[in-house]
Image (tube, rainbow, N blue to C red; front, side, top):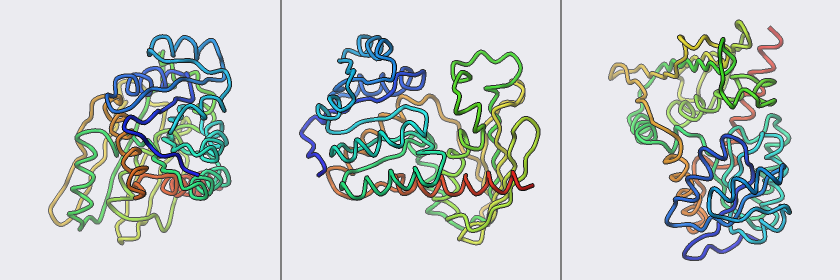
Length: 301
């Protein structure tokens, strides 16, 4: 049974990696409307360090943190996240998931079914859907309609020459590449603006790059080039739409902490009202389905 949120909801954090330390923990610690109830991690020493830096408590037992929380945010590799999200939902905790929800459709479906069975609220933290000004821009373009083409390229340099990024040590990113790491960002824009994906063409480029051509339910088509191996000089994230009113280019955004705080607000609102957020676990499942199919078609050649 879903937990009732008091005036100041208790939100715990599962995960202690760079993303958790740089985004989730600062946003939760600095959010005036919630109580940061604690941190759990697979490495207890990392949980203790992050908790001390954030003014909260470390837990060695994940179930104890779930019992002490009304909701949890997850900052873990996707296929570690998924079973813990199921566990949290079964404990009545509302869940703030990271993207992708999982890297298999079966695991993403388990999360969605657990969330819906427990009646808990869910939000998937796709940065562009919560950051300003991108969130506002997405809503405006979806309302405007009339788009016939989308073009996106997300050229990350995580594994480019000379990279020293802390995220480069992530085994799941190394294995799954840009399709799964940055692909959800692009889909989080395309789906609300152009409609669901009805057909996919996918081919592999150099160093794990994926080139996608998508057909959408609105009749529009879109393209996306996704990689984590671009040279640093070529790194860029850009998306544009073309239609009867001309061309609209997605604005730049700055940082993720504010965006994550907005996602926290969205989760709290969904939990209190019972109205699902558009970027919920079921949306995360659909993104997983699309990425899995793109991966299959690219491998087939």
